[in-house]
Each structure stands twice: as C-alpha cells, then as structure tokens.
Picture 1 (cartoon, rainbow, N blue to C red):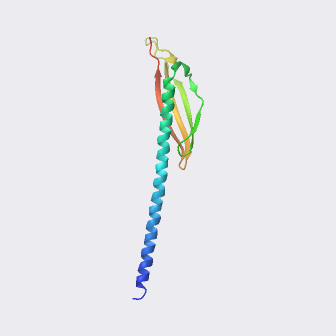
Picture 2 (picture 1 turned 180 degrees about the vertical axis):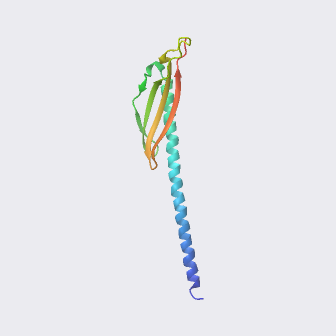
Picture 3 (picture 1 turned 120 degrees about the vertical axis):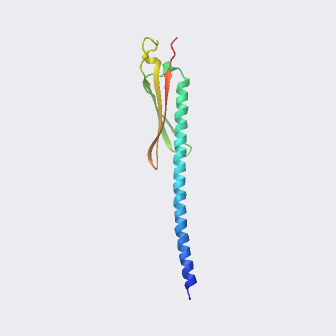
Length: 132
C-alpha cells in the first residue's frame, strides 16, 4: 500500500514524543526531590551545629526562653531561620541536689520555605549540671 510506510513513521514519532515527555516529567520530579532532600539535610546540619555550639558554652549563660534567631542561606541560596529555645525541665528535688536551673532542655528549629511549602529540621538535647 502506498503511504503505509509514512503512516508507520508518523505513529512511531508520536509514540517517541510521548515517551520523551514522560521521561522529562520524571527527570524534573527527581530534580525537585533531590533539592528538597538536600535542603532537609543542610537544615539538620545547621540545627546540629547550633545545638553543639550552645552545648559547648556555659550552661549558666543559657537563660530560660528563646534566644535570638539566626538567619542564613543554604548552598542553593534558600534562606532559613534558626530559632533556639531553652526550657526548664524542673529540679530533681532536694535529694538529688539539683535545682530548677540545673536541668534544662534545648531545642533548635531551622525553618525554610521551598516549592513544597514550609519545612523544618529540629534537634533537641538535655543540659544537666551535675551536683557536687
């Protein structure tokens, strides 16, 4: 039949086009997921670094309440805000020799916005002053 070869070519080009569009969509989604995972990892690293910085300092210098927020940018220039909260865990009582200021909790939260909305990474720790 005349023209059958042309029709076969048109159908195969159409199928190839559909396949290429599907591959492109998967590639775009994979890139987005990779960037989201990278920001999550970097947010966790920022939270852990701030946590360790506060833990390395004198516990008596950390008063109960929120510390000044820290603003920065991830490697892809996405801005973030890191907040630190110091909260009381109460004293252990007279028998333990611990007062209310001897047991504190420390929570660092890193918050940023991306294509999927507002995201957070968080670290928490216990600070304890040992009785003498």
